[in-house]
Length: 283
Length: 124
Image (cartoon, rainbow over all chains, first blue to last red):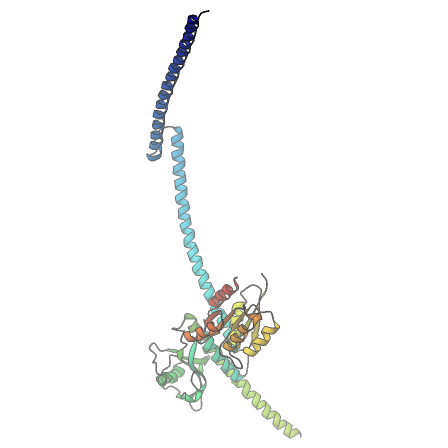
């Protein structure tokens, strides 16, 4: 074989390879075109689906679009009804709750008041010592009512005078005795009606004759004395409803406690006097 | 809940009973009573106390002196002290708190207020 033949063989091989390559390139080109077409078609479909979904989500539920739609609509209506029922029930329960809370607060207050009244009456009747009874009344007025300056007057039936027996905040010696039926204190004893001063004076001298509160101490209809409140503790701005109940309780229980302790003390004194006589006679 | 022991230091038996009544609403509460500061210190040393409730105006030793002595004792440094008093002035309260009291209640007391403060201090 000559050199010329060799060259022709090489050229033929190159040509064949070039043809193959060109063929492959054409196929690749067609494949790419197909892919682009598919891509465009799919993008169009995605856009269509997105728009459809958007319409479904944003727009109203199409009525009568099918059995499934109808079922869903009816379910939704049922749930909405149930929801409004539950909301109404919740409101009722909340209202009941508020009512229960209020009732709980009231019961708590009643409970505390009863405890106060129990302690007051228990203490008042726990002793027959006259001085101790007076001391307990003072304690009740300070600790349960919250008075700072006050006095306990007892009626001297013979002299028809109300004499101060015990006091707090001002010495007993500085408190004037009051004639039965005279002035606010005397009148409270006479009428057997509690007195409440709406505009108390800030002057103690005036207050001693025109106190903040006067409560008659009564046994049945008989007045044995008067409790007078001249002023309240600094932190106690006004009377609470329980205070009036305490006043009523004091009017009855304090009077009987004072009366019975006084009787007991007198009878004890008389008994010791008689015992002394008997001892003298028996010697 | 473990039993809690309260020490009430108050010269008025009426007030002591009233406080006892309120504290008895705490399950398992036990109450030790003392009539003045000295009696209170004695009861404190002979009982395991969880909280002290004390008045200020008392014979022999007043409440403020008691608070001072309790606070100066290392063993009772963390013991909660509630003052219950008729003294409603702001200076009295400030003085009591400066000495180491944890709470200050003025008379006449409301059981609900007292219980709320006690429960708060004992983290009940």
